[in-house]
Image (tube, rainbow, N blue to C red; front, side, top):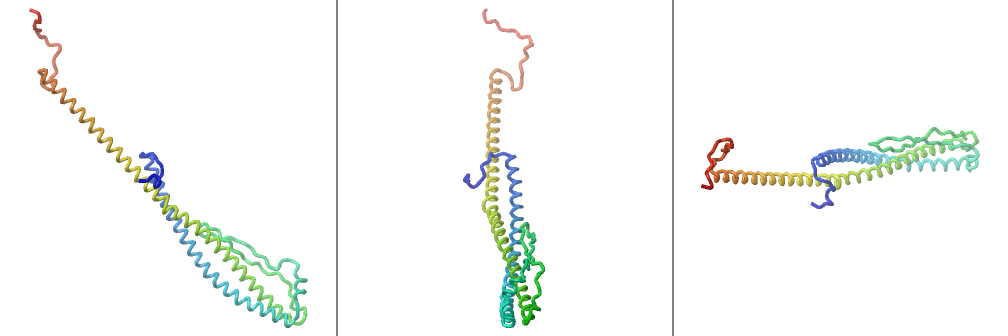
Length: 242
């Protein structure tokens, strides 16, 4: 097994236990990230459908708004100066909040109530001006909604890419390397056990051979195996010198 396909470790029982725990954690993390990715993809598809619908509505509302503006200009004449003079503060303000989808914060824009002066009583064409203003207000609401959906779409798309990279890294790199490392440690420990077993058999063979040699020496000395000579027994020594 190539050393690049596993982590550099010292084979031991403790290391094996640690890597088994890490492998369980990595597998659980992979499962959770996979579920997170699926949840984000489902939300992204829902956003795409909603974004498509809102954009189609915006096109229709934009045609109506410009047609209403043309009617107001045809009836009341040039109203641009009157509109500029009536604007003191921002007529429309938006607030932002965040939705949490599987740990990803999605910005959501909400348009607050309009605060505009009523120009319907400035003379002829007041009704057409009011209708044009209402049409552009509805158009602005749709534009803010599209901005919210588009921003959420970009945020979700980036989060999905990051999550998928993490899932692929765990699935293709981290988990296989951990599994290879565990197999390497198990193989090395088995090899050590075989070496220890061979060493024990060798020691037992040496001990057994020594026992047989000692028994043979005892038989050669005239003793039966297991018999120990009594050193206190009186024994007549033969005279060496006569």
